[in-house]
Length: 128
Length: 128
Image (cartoon, rainbow over all chains, first blue to last red; front, top):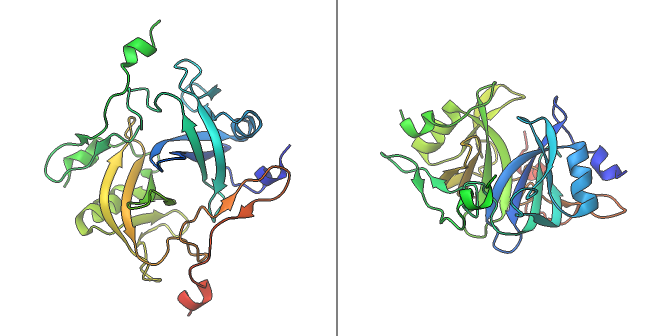
Protein backbone atom coordinates (compact mmCIF):
# COMPACT_ATOMS: atom_id res chain seq x y z
CA UNK A 1 0.00 0.00 0.00
CA UNK A 2 1.46 3.34 -1.07
CA UNK A 3 -0.77 6.38 -0.45
CA UNK A 4 1.20 8.46 -2.98
CA UNK A 5 -0.18 6.25 -5.73
CA UNK A 6 -3.75 7.08 -4.65
CA UNK A 7 -3.26 10.66 -5.84
CA UNK A 8 -2.46 9.56 -9.39
CA UNK A 9 -5.07 9.74 -12.13
CA UNK A 10 -5.45 6.46 -13.97
CA UNK A 11 -7.60 6.64 -17.13
CA UNK A 12 -10.98 5.00 -17.66
CA UNK A 13 -9.18 1.71 -18.35
CA UNK A 14 -7.20 1.99 -15.11
CA UNK A 15 -3.99 2.83 -16.95
CA UNK A 16 -1.38 5.61 -16.80
CA UNK A 17 1.35 6.28 -19.40
CA UNK A 18 4.89 5.69 -18.13
CA UNK A 19 7.81 7.36 -19.92
CA UNK A 20 11.10 5.54 -19.38
CA UNK A 21 14.31 7.56 -19.56
CA UNK A 22 17.97 6.59 -19.25
CA UNK A 23 18.90 8.09 -15.89
CA UNK A 24 22.47 8.86 -17.00
CA UNK A 25 22.14 10.26 -20.51
CA UNK A 26 18.54 11.53 -20.41
CA UNK A 27 17.72 9.55 -23.55
CA UNK A 28 14.02 8.63 -23.68
CA UNK A 29 13.86 4.86 -24.14
CA UNK A 30 10.18 3.97 -24.42
CA UNK A 31 6.65 4.71 -23.31
CA UNK A 32 4.38 1.98 -22.03
CA UNK A 33 1.27 1.68 -19.86
CA UNK A 34 1.00 0.77 -16.19
CA UNK A 35 -2.01 -0.15 -14.13
CA UNK A 36 -1.96 0.29 -10.37
CA UNK A 37 -0.63 -3.24 -9.86
CA UNK A 38 2.25 -2.70 -12.33
CA UNK A 39 3.20 0.54 -10.63
CA UNK A 40 3.13 -1.05 -7.17
CA UNK A 41 5.33 -3.92 -8.42
CA UNK A 42 7.69 -1.39 -9.99
CA UNK A 43 7.99 0.45 -6.67
CA UNK A 44 8.33 -2.68 -4.52
CA UNK A 45 10.81 -4.58 -6.73
CA UNK A 46 12.75 -1.65 -8.22
CA UNK A 47 12.31 -3.18 -11.70
CA UNK A 48 9.85 -1.75 -14.24
CA UNK A 49 6.61 -3.69 -14.76
CA UNK A 50 3.98 -2.73 -17.33
CA UNK A 51 0.47 -3.72 -18.32
CA UNK A 52 0.16 -5.12 -21.83
CA UNK A 53 -3.06 -3.93 -23.46
CA UNK A 54 -2.74 -6.51 -26.26
CA UNK A 55 -2.01 -9.47 -23.98
CA UNK A 56 -4.14 -8.09 -21.11
CA UNK A 57 -1.53 -8.97 -18.51
CA UNK A 58 1.21 -7.61 -16.31
CA UNK A 59 4.77 -8.09 -17.54
CA UNK A 60 8.22 -7.54 -16.16
CA UNK A 61 10.27 -5.59 -18.71
CA UNK A 62 13.09 -7.92 -19.74
CA UNK A 63 11.36 -11.12 -18.64
CA UNK A 64 12.18 -12.84 -21.94
CA UNK A 65 15.14 -10.76 -23.19
CA UNK A 66 16.92 -10.20 -19.88
CA UNK A 67 16.86 -6.48 -20.70
CA UNK A 68 15.55 -5.34 -17.34
CA UNK A 69 15.31 -1.74 -16.16
CA UNK A 70 16.42 -0.83 -12.62
CA UNK A 71 14.51 2.13 -11.22
CA UNK A 72 16.48 5.21 -10.14
CA UNK A 73 13.57 7.62 -9.57
CA UNK A 74 9.84 7.95 -10.22
CA UNK A 75 8.26 11.32 -10.99
CA UNK A 76 4.78 12.47 -11.89
CA UNK A 77 3.59 15.57 -13.70
CA UNK A 78 1.48 18.57 -12.69
CA UNK A 79 -1.76 16.77 -13.61
CA UNK A 80 -0.61 13.52 -11.95
CA UNK A 81 -1.69 11.57 -15.03
CA UNK A 82 1.73 10.64 -16.47
CA UNK A 83 4.71 8.88 -14.84
CA UNK A 84 8.39 9.49 -15.70
CA UNK A 85 10.89 6.87 -14.57
CA UNK A 86 14.66 7.20 -14.66
CA UNK A 87 16.26 3.77 -15.09
CA UNK A 88 19.50 1.94 -15.59
CA UNK A 89 18.87 -0.10 -18.73
CA UNK A 90 20.32 -3.61 -19.07
CA UNK A 91 21.06 -4.34 -22.76
CA UNK A 92 18.60 -2.31 -24.81
CA UNK A 93 15.03 -1.10 -24.38
CA UNK A 94 13.64 -1.86 -27.82
CA UNK A 95 12.61 -5.33 -28.99
CA UNK A 96 13.71 -4.30 -32.49
CA UNK A 97 17.30 -4.32 -31.24
CA UNK A 98 17.85 -0.59 -30.69
CA UNK A 99 18.83 0.99 -27.37
CA UNK A 100 15.80 3.32 -27.53
CA UNK A 101 12.43 2.61 -29.13
CA UNK A 102 12.58 6.11 -30.65
CA UNK A 103 14.99 5.21 -33.43
CA UNK A 104 13.09 6.81 -36.34
CA UNK A 105 13.29 10.51 -37.10
CA UNK A 106 10.94 12.61 -39.20
CA UNK A 107 12.56 14.05 -42.33
CA UNK A 108 11.13 16.69 -44.62
CA UNK A 109 10.14 15.32 -48.02
CA UNK A 110 11.13 11.71 -47.50
CA UNK A 111 10.40 8.74 -45.18
CA UNK A 112 11.17 8.28 -41.49
CA UNK A 113 14.94 7.92 -41.18
CA UNK A 114 16.47 5.29 -38.91
CA UNK A 115 18.85 7.17 -36.65
CA UNK A 116 19.38 4.49 -33.99
CA UNK A 117 22.14 1.94 -34.02
CA UNK A 118 21.29 -1.72 -33.58
CA UNK A 119 22.86 -3.14 -30.44
CA UNK A 120 21.43 -6.66 -30.72
CA UNK A 121 19.74 -8.91 -33.25
CA UNK A 122 16.18 -9.70 -32.16
CA UNK A 123 16.34 -13.25 -33.56
CA UNK A 124 19.31 -14.01 -31.31
CA UNK A 125 17.56 -12.74 -28.19
CA UNK A 126 13.98 -13.85 -28.73
CA UNK A 127 14.68 -17.34 -30.05
CA UNK A 128 12.15 -20.02 -29.33
CA UNK B 1 0.16 16.53 -46.65
CA UNK B 2 2.96 14.49 -45.15
CA UNK B 3 2.93 10.77 -46.02
CA UNK B 4 5.17 9.93 -43.03
CA UNK B 5 2.30 10.86 -40.75
CA UNK B 6 0.07 8.27 -42.47
CA UNK B 7 2.18 5.49 -41.00
CA UNK B 8 1.51 6.63 -37.42
CA UNK B 9 -1.06 4.88 -35.26
CA UNK B 10 -3.53 7.29 -33.74
CA UNK B 11 -5.80 5.78 -31.06
CA UNK B 12 -9.58 5.26 -31.30
CA UNK B 13 -10.05 8.96 -30.47
CA UNK B 14 -7.64 10.01 -33.22
CA UNK B 15 -4.92 10.95 -30.74
CA UNK B 16 -1.25 10.08 -30.20
CA UNK B 17 0.81 10.86 -27.06
CA UNK B 18 3.63 13.35 -27.64
CA UNK B 19 6.56 13.45 -25.21
CA UNK B 20 8.34 16.80 -25.19
CA UNK B 21 12.01 16.86 -24.26
CA UNK B 22 14.52 19.69 -23.89
CA UNK B 23 16.78 19.15 -26.89
CA UNK B 24 19.86 20.41 -25.05
CA UNK B 25 19.66 18.85 -21.59
CA UNK B 26 17.47 15.82 -22.34
CA UNK B 27 15.08 16.83 -19.56
CA UNK B 28 11.55 15.57 -20.21
CA UNK B 29 9.26 18.60 -20.03
CA UNK B 30 5.73 17.32 -20.55
CA UNK B 31 3.49 14.83 -22.28
CA UNK B 32 0.40 15.94 -24.15
CA UNK B 33 -1.85 14.63 -26.92
CA UNK B 34 -1.86 15.43 -30.61
CA UNK B 35 -4.38 14.70 -33.29
CA UNK B 36 -3.36 14.57 -36.92
CA UNK B 37 -4.11 18.28 -37.36
CA UNK B 38 -1.98 19.26 -34.33
CA UNK B 39 0.91 17.18 -35.62
CA UNK B 40 0.66 18.67 -39.12
CA UNK B 41 0.64 22.18 -37.65
CA UNK B 42 3.63 21.28 -35.47
CA UNK B 43 5.54 20.12 -38.56
CA UNK B 44 4.54 23.03 -40.77
CA UNK B 45 5.08 25.83 -38.24
CA UNK B 46 7.97 24.37 -36.20
CA UNK B 47 6.07 25.20 -32.98
CA UNK B 48 4.34 22.50 -30.92
CA UNK B 49 0.55 22.31 -31.16
CA UNK B 50 -1.58 19.93 -29.13
CA UNK B 51 -5.16 18.76 -28.91
CA UNK B 52 -6.88 19.54 -25.62
CA UNK B 53 -9.16 16.69 -24.59
CA UNK B 54 -10.88 18.86 -21.96
CA UNK B 55 -11.48 21.87 -24.24
CA UNK B 56 -11.86 19.72 -27.37
CA UNK B 57 -9.72 22.05 -29.46
CA UNK B 58 -6.30 22.55 -30.96
CA UNK B 59 -3.93 24.83 -29.06
CA UNK B 60 -0.53 26.32 -29.70
CA UNK B 61 1.70 25.67 -26.68
CA UNK B 62 2.48 29.10 -25.25
CA UNK B 63 -0.45 30.89 -26.87
CA UNK B 64 -1.37 32.59 -23.58
CA UNK B 65 1.93 32.40 -21.63
CA UNK B 66 4.33 33.07 -24.49
CA UNK B 67 6.16 29.90 -23.48
CA UNK B 68 6.37 28.44 -26.95
CA UNK B 69 8.40 25.37 -27.95
CA UNK B 70 10.50 25.44 -31.12
CA UNK B 71 10.86 22.00 -32.69
CA UNK B 72 14.36 20.56 -33.17
CA UNK B 73 13.42 17.00 -34.17
CA UNK B 74 10.45 14.66 -34.26
CA UNK B 75 10.87 10.95 -33.63
CA UNK B 76 8.48 8.01 -33.36
CA UNK B 77 8.86 4.67 -31.63
CA UNK B 78 8.98 1.07 -32.86
CA UNK B 79 5.18 0.74 -32.72
CA UNK B 80 4.67 4.18 -34.31
CA UNK B 81 2.11 5.02 -31.63
CA UNK B 82 4.10 7.59 -29.60
CA UNK B 83 5.88 10.79 -30.71
CA UNK B 84 9.03 12.23 -29.10
CA UNK B 85 9.85 15.87 -29.87
CA UNK B 86 13.08 17.65 -28.99
CA UNK B 87 12.42 21.36 -28.47
CA UNK B 88 13.94 24.63 -27.44
CA UNK B 89 11.67 25.80 -24.63
CA UNK B 90 10.89 29.48 -24.21
CA UNK B 91 10.35 30.30 -20.50
CA UNK B 92 9.06 27.13 -18.86
CA UNK B 93 6.89 24.21 -19.92
CA UNK B 94 4.66 23.87 -16.87
CA UNK B 95 1.68 26.14 -16.14
CA UNK B 96 2.46 25.65 -12.43
CA UNK B 97 5.63 27.70 -12.94
CA UNK B 98 8.22 24.92 -13.15
CA UNK B 99 10.53 24.34 -16.10
CA UNK B 100 9.31 20.74 -16.40
CA UNK B 101 5.86 19.40 -15.56
CA UNK B 102 7.60 16.47 -13.84
CA UNK B 103 8.51 18.35 -10.69
CA UNK B 104 7.26 15.81 -8.13
CA UNK B 105 9.32 12.77 -7.13
CA UNK B 106 8.12 9.61 -5.40
CA UNK B 107 9.61 9.11 -1.94
CA UNK B 108 9.44 5.97 0.17
CA UNK B 109 7.18 6.35 3.21
CA UNK B 110 6.12 9.96 2.70
CA UNK B 111 4.38 12.17 0.11
CA UNK B 112 5.48 13.22 -3.38
CA UNK B 113 8.40 15.60 -2.96
CA UNK B 114 8.67 18.78 -5.02
CA UNK B 115 12.09 18.64 -6.65
CA UNK B 116 11.57 21.32 -9.31
CA UNK B 117 12.43 24.95 -8.87
CA UNK B 118 9.83 27.58 -9.70
CA UNK B 119 10.93 29.81 -12.55
CA UNK B 120 7.80 31.95 -12.77
CA UNK B 121 4.69 32.75 -10.76
CA UNK B 122 1.56 31.53 -12.59
CA UNK B 123 -0.51 34.49 -11.39
CA UNK B 124 1.92 36.88 -13.06
CA UNK B 125 1.82 35.04 -16.37
CA UNK B 126 -1.81 33.97 -16.64
CA UNK B 127 -3.42 37.18 -15.44
CA UNK B 128 -6.79 38.09 -16.82
